[in-house]
Image (cartoon, rainbow, N blue to C red; front, side, top):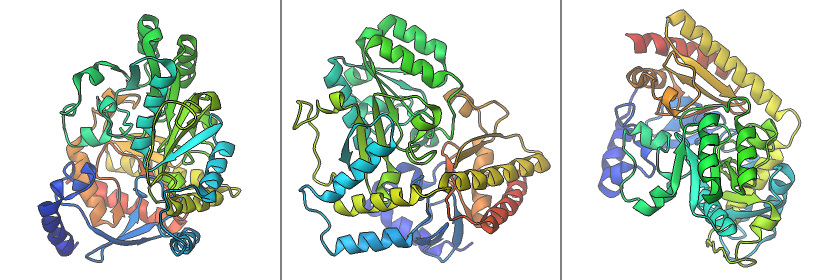
Length: 429
């Protein structure tokens, strides 16, 4: 596979951008070699600057449920661009998207739009502290909630992929107020809340782990979180930046029937453009300025291009049969992968919730950050590069999720299963 143009562009990029990339996992450090530079994408395929075409299961890290450059989204964004790209003033479009979110997500009565998932989680934490008057927060090992100072402690995929320790530059007092517990460990949660529950402002969790690969919640785990937080007056925050509108039209909270106090959203509600949001009960959200005293602002919040794309995306997702179709396609792909692993004699563990899936090169059951870390990352490196050679684009990290789209065809899936078997044989030498 020719990579001449990508190599040249990467050399140039490193002169002007730290590491040559604007998000660390893109650097391919976990898998060796240098990153591909993408020129274009359409439907379930992406094409790099050297003309190499790949069937894509990264989907821009999740939001491209209807593939790349969907004609309805492109048309709507193009139409809005001619009317203006940013106003820094209210538009009807913001209210339309907000109403769709409120109507769909069980926990959300009121929602504030922002520009990224990180901004959403940081704002939700500030709101929780302001609402409760408490300082401490609880998060789970391996869950990533953006790059805010309070949250980069045992923070999952990006940091883990690069082999970095907890991030330098974090103020010690902030780190002291961030309490980490193992994901899916109900006993650890109960013990922590029995000791410190009245000091904890909020507990933030990915209801389905998506930043250490896909780690589903064990039965009763989310219900336990709801129980202990309610008993202690702590706000329960679901980070649904990945899962919101990905695993069901109302997110993981609708899928599992557990309603948090606040929800963070992103990716999909921007239809591929930069959008985030946080929302919840009106009595909590009314603590945000200009109604309340908790301040948060952003010039590009509710940007008309991004909001327009989000409205079109949610219109597409609300059509009958979308999630059932995603389930069938994802099941077919993962069943094919499981058969390949068996035939190739490879030890691997599989996880999947709807159209989110992972394959870990380990014999352990995947339930937590510690079990994820037992994966054979060297084998994954060889496998990743072999998949590229076979024309399949997956995330360049053992610790990231894969995503199915509604526009992957049966033929795409068959080709992927066939290519994966070849890639496994290459990876095994």
